[in-house]
Image (cartoon, rainbow, N blue to C red; front, side, top):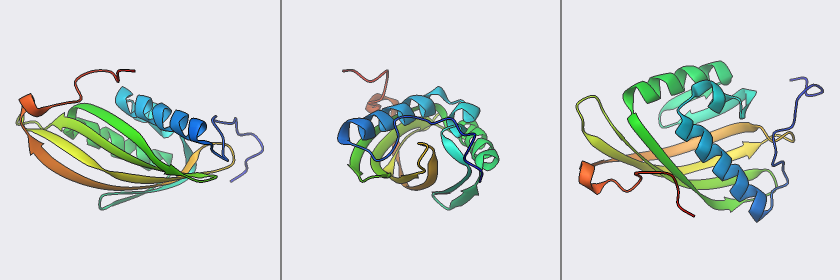
Length: 147
């Protein structure tokens, strides 16, 4: 990939605790927009993902995957938490809540490992996710994150 014309996507590696937390919050905000095109812009054009049993390569496949995901996972709401970081890698814990077309609510939770290029774009994303059926009364992610 020719990187001479790429606009940086701060914060850039090497990460500090502060910049890693900023990167996690930016990702959370983008995913909560449920806008596949917006989310895909955070990744390299040739990004590699593993999401559950799905293996995805490139932004176009990311957009297609996210469209399918959010058509199925209605009223999606996500929280990400920094778990660990190194110079160009970040690990996060996450949970999100959603309901399916029958109205059943779910809490999905797991871990993601991210690797970034020098311009701040995510080149690799590996997600392990588990789902738990919940009642609507058991929801905890009802609104924006509180300070």
